[in-house]
Image (tube, rainbow, N blue to C red; front, side):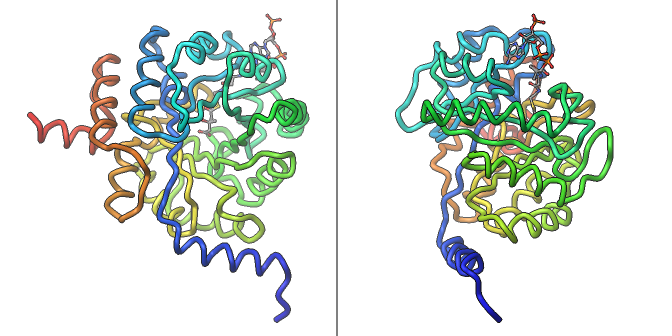
Length: 317
Ligand SMILES: CC(C)(COP(=O)([O-])OP(=O)([O-])OC[C@H]1O[C@@H](n2cnc3c(N)ncnc32)[C@H](O)[C@@H]1OP(=O)([O-])[O-])[C@@H](O)C(=O)NCCC(=O)NCCSC(=O)C[C@@](C)(O)CC(=O)[O-]
């Protein structure tokens, strides 16, 4: 068999993959976790949450989004939150920016990193960002160009990677197309969002089998919602396929305002517990994280969605 340069690169990468025992957790609680919260969460509470998460050791925290306040009122204090936090040199503070207006706001507020967010389903794209997939890519290009000019790294999100609340099953090919367009545009990584949590280890394996044929695992992240209780299993599947960046939300907070019925993200506490149990490193202090998760849940007037968070709290009592 004739080995192309691409094959050799992938073989080299998979041997490195075996050695890599560090998994980067992107904590999305302050943004994805709170964006759909019905009660107004005071700016000071959001700032405290980010500061407490920083102390847990996260390398990246998604703090807020620069989207229309008419669409997502909970994020309208984006600038105050980004400007009010205490920053650690070892943590990157990120924000979602759907267009150039959003990017300019995030840059002014000193976001270390921004994220564009599209979808693999036309209907979800329309509902979430009010444009087609093609139009969204046209809007993202100037964001990526402006970010390059200011040396701000851009992450891409693709929503509905296995299923869409409006269209049902989404094909891996549709995800591949948007993912590669985002990477070609200049995103350093694309996070694959199972927005409504319908994925199973089977569908995630099929998706990654397709994406990893032409993309390095270091360019991909997994963003799993736990609606059907499959998120940890899906993440484990991703880990076995070489994925080393996982998005999660403290206390399992969250849900997308444009995906009715979707529950929160997988809880960061549960992901960290699982990965540490597998001998993988995350750099995160689990005890501290559990206490942050239980405190924000108490503030919101409910129990943490993290099973690990609840178990460790019960053990203490
Ligand atoms: C994308 C837009 C803005 C398009 O919204 P639009 O209405 O099509 O935009 P427009 O350009 O026609 O402008 C209309 C108005 O919005 C304003 N506007 C325009 N842009 C901005 C901006 N950046 N910040 C603030 N204001 C903005 C603009 O100034 C104007 O104001 P007006 O003249 O009417 O007063 C809108 O659809 C929107 O804000 N959508 C919110 C989407 C969102 O935040 N969804 C949740 C996050 S995605 C998610 O959760 C999924 C993810 C990432 O976690 C992964 C997964 O789980 O799958």
